Image 1 (spheres, rainbow over the protein chains, first blue to last red):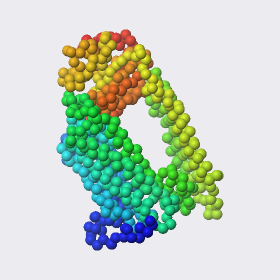
Image 2: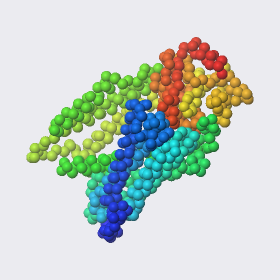
Image 3: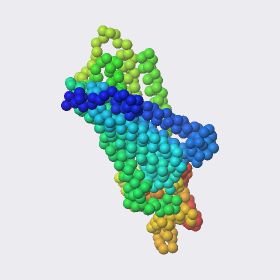
Image 4: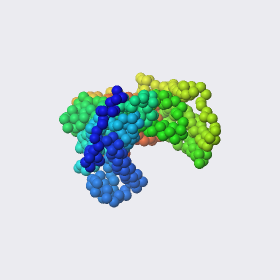
Length: 322
Length: 267
């Protein structure tokens, strides 16, 4: 098993610029790409939070230039209450998915995990490359919601149905905005599933000789556990997003109950369940908080004991507790 | 530097405990019969979490102070009994805390959700919709008329979709935009949403319950103090969510009867 690292993942050094820096198969380059994407997402999310704070402090103040982003959402630069909700939704989604998940898990994990287990690279470099570029596309699909006619969704990062499922009758951004949101998150899930697959295989199959599971550094354990959680969590969120899109475009009623009336119009849906979305979403949402925190716990433990030059009180206990 | 850091930790820990101990931010006055249990639960949780928090911070500060600059020849000390004892002790401690909170809390929860309303409870219906609450009283016949969703029309003020021409039970139903209730009378609240997810939140009543579209949710409470209180929506429901509210007016039985008569005359 350990011999695999010697043959399976050896690839020639890239020669062209594109192979070296853009569509790279190198786990370190992919890690850095993920990190750059997370920083960009954090920057956008942060600017959105500034705008929201300004609106909370000076509700009727005109923010110069904001009308260029949305003519209806901020006429003359003055943010409307619904545009505040739209920015809040985008802020939450960008931060939870494209910062909290990508930076500690995908970025640091890609860069350090193969090094820590003694592998030359991930076992499926093409999957690894796809994982980043798929996530990249997902990010821009989400950002595209800013530029559609009635803006991004206003339903919050949890997108509770039926607010998110009945379409634009529920408010601005609840039509195209939600479709783009759900598409983006479904794409993101594909990226993370490919990543998780690589992480798990690297940890299980590509450890260098003598590196038993219990000798793995705590951060490597953290990424391994995170990938196992991600594999189940994202595999549920992706179909949930697809069902949500179907409720919009195919006339299905997965998340919409019968006899709902919006704007005095009886909705053409029946038989769905509001709670179904909440169950599916939180099947992802609960592990997601650990996907965000466990790599941090692993990294802190690793860095702390390395710099203290002492072993962990109990390596095994910390692994079990993660 | 490390000792300074230890002092900072102590200062922050104590400073954050002061507002709690001085009751700087307290919930508004409780006007319900079940609220005392919930308030008690809150303060028990606060006390348990607060003690654990302060203890953890003090121990952290102590260790930083004590072991910040060890002499090079100092022996490395280990926890007596090794890691196993420490881990088991910590697990038992945290487990006991959680179980204790659960045992205290179960009564507060059961009082609201596992106990059915008494037979004499007064039924009131509440319907949530973008972005208003409407309340319905059954009238003299004591029965709510059926709801026809296709008839709901804000323009003609048929907020509930009632067919008063055909349904005898609907004829005397009273629909209001404000919730009036008599004092010291148990209310059986029958909740449903006309469109999306909403929530019924009255801080003074210690009541917060979501509306689930497609489900009928029921709740019961007794108000014990006359006054006007705010009912707000706490489940994001769209662009007017921030403004979705109604008022709960708790009145003496006599005032309530008059109020209901006046509302009935306006139907």
